[in-house]
Image (cartoon, rainbow, N blue to C red; front, top):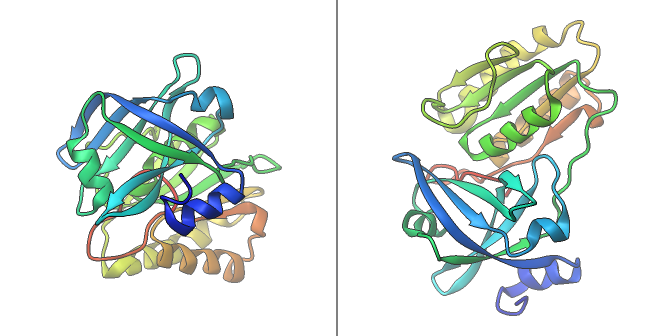
Length: 250
């Protein structure tokens, strides 16, 4: 398998990655541009266990070459051996596969590199900067942290998307995507410092496109002086001419 997948597959094999075959069991069009696939896991959950924000690498054919992208597990059920994957439909081999996927189709998945460490001490408030690509991970994070209040900057339009934010404890702030993420940076720079004042144990979660994530992570760490263990920053996609893929870190 590693040889067929080129150097990425070879490196993952050296890192003791584990491979599984997923089988599509159900398809749901949540919106015209957002699709959820339910899959049987091929023994994955029994072998690896489950943790919040867990993701897998899926392998797609791209012009005859292997191409991997990471997607967060949605509603994993270890007893049934099932979970869901969510895709924003745009141009690209991953969306092309998801757009035409039907029950009985299979896809190879690799598990390596996924982990989750709950902040210590527990967050007094979560400040999340996300977009459709990281929505499944955000939902998983909110579920893991329970009643912890959160302020969420959501780049893009959350209308119709399966966002688990609870208005009673989570404030959702939609931000239009403009200037390749520049507008989001401006909003967060203007609003986050005041929110952090007097917050004893904040936790900042930044999971948007790679460039914007780096910019905001630098701002939070260097200008707002948050220690590294209070900041999770991971780019979930690279800004190109097409919209973000949904599901997991890139």
